[in-house]
Every structure is written in C-alpha cells, then in structure tokens.
Length: 118
Image 1 (cartoon, helix red, strand yellow):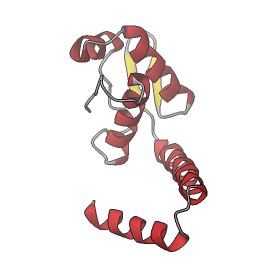
Image 2 (spheres, rainbow, N blue to C red; image 1 turned 30 degrees about the vertical axis):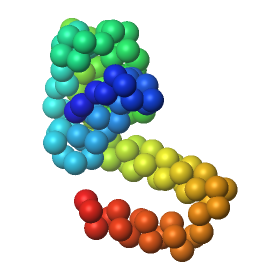
Image 3 (cartoon, rainbow, N blue to C red; image 1 turned 45 degrees about the vertical axis):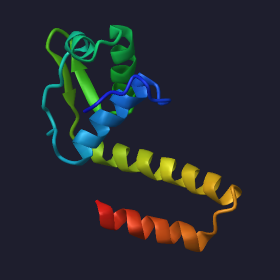
Image 4 (tube, one colour; image 1 turned 90 degrees about the horizontal axis):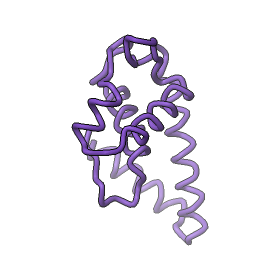
C-alpha cells in the first residue's frame, strides 16, 4: 500500500482503498491481522486519527473487524462489500463521463482496453 500526501484523494480514503485493493487481490487473507493504527501512522508519518478514521470506515463496511486488545483483522465475506463498492464507484464515474459528453461506445472501448492492461 502506498500513501501519496500530495494526492487530491484524502489520506484516509487512500488507506481505505489500499486495504480493499490488497484484500481484492488476495494479498490479505480473511482473519489476517492488519498493522495497528499506531504502526501505520508511524510508517507513513500521518496522524493516527486519520488511520483510525479509515479503519472505522473499513469496519463500518464489514471489510475488517476489531478485537479489543488484539487488533484489526480482515473479515471473511468482504468480497461482496468490495465488489458492491466498486460497482457503485464505476456507475458514478460512468454517469459523470456520460454527462461530460463521452459516448457509450467510447466508454466500452475504454473499459475493454483497461481490462487488458491488468
């Protein structure tokens, strides 16, 4: 996971996306312990409250769960939440692109090209 402090994307959202991408790509397994808030804040030189906010969002969405005194862990069954979020974000981007004048054909072409690059 990488954090770009110069990005327009808020850091808590970068953390959220980083964890979901690691989970979606099976680089984290269900039940696997995540680094602590303190550890991540030190590693990336960011405010612990920012990390805690991201962890709170991940927990709210059922992607992670916390065990008091033990830490935070990747949930089982997180795949549905991640796919649902990805679909929602994709739909929002498609609507925005369409409103900006991008044709449906061009959007499909872009999706096909993007899929090949993975």
